Image (cartoon, one colour):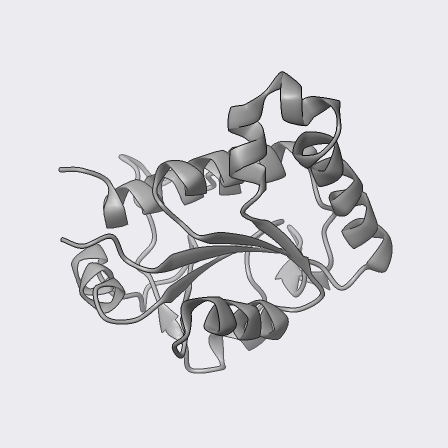
Length: 185
């Protein structure tokens, strides 16, 4: 299979908290590093950090600057390479527009969620990835808000473990999904 045209969006709003309320979560340094490194390992072309909070975008850019141009760039060139994929945007729509500009085609957002029961299989998603630039959309907190699922975008079947417990950290979910979609078999 050819390497698909793939990007990742890490959404901090609109997402849910543990009570099911719509919230905006904080950007975390660990998510930036781990998801960027995973995305780079699996050939993704972009990682979008989506937050409407200007201060969070500024903080993200400051952290990225350390690893792209600051001391961290020379200290750890592999991390610089991975973090070069990260773009900070105010909305998921902005991420989609940028990904379409980069890929030169209409992007297909693919939403993820541990509690979903309406998702397509990984096999089907691989088929789509062979034709369309995909934007894999991951939610922070307790997952993406319902209004994103009402937009008619594709939804990926959730990862299922061996029991009833199903609350992976977003970094782990992103790694598993990317491996299942584009990892070597």
